[in-house]
Image (cartoon, rainbow, N blue to C red):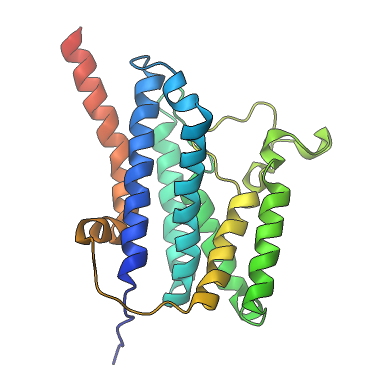
Length: 233
């Protein structure tokens, strides 16, 4: 007899809201890439800060939700394969290719978590959260070239050490983002989330189907933009 894992609707709703904000950002990014809107629209410090905040909350929730899943390894493999699919599709779109985007990172983090969970479960949650925050802060600027050039050979881009020719329209390396994910796991152990009632059902529905929505939104945007461009010619 299978037991049903109770849902934490508040997490679903917050995740759904973050997905909507990320989709809105991608919509604006596509308009900028196509030259329809000025790059200053999304290049401001405030817009980039909001992007990091919403992405951070999304990744944090993914780490928390590992506490409620019995199939983290399977979820991780599926998520990583979805990232590979996105990478392949975007390789045909000039200036939009995604190499080690958020799906690659989440998939890798879930797999590593599933393999290391017996050890991670023995770490006191407050200690684990503190170490995760520290490692995230220390590695935040890795991809910006803060380490000696010898580290940036190109083969370590998944760890946040991209080579000089590396490009990705959506880049979330394991350092620091994997530490944000791990921080979510420890935060979940501290907060002890309990089942609750939904308040914003639409956001909750989006949160429950975040993977398929994330996979479909960019191809849908591209088809819309292509159709509009054809009509306006």
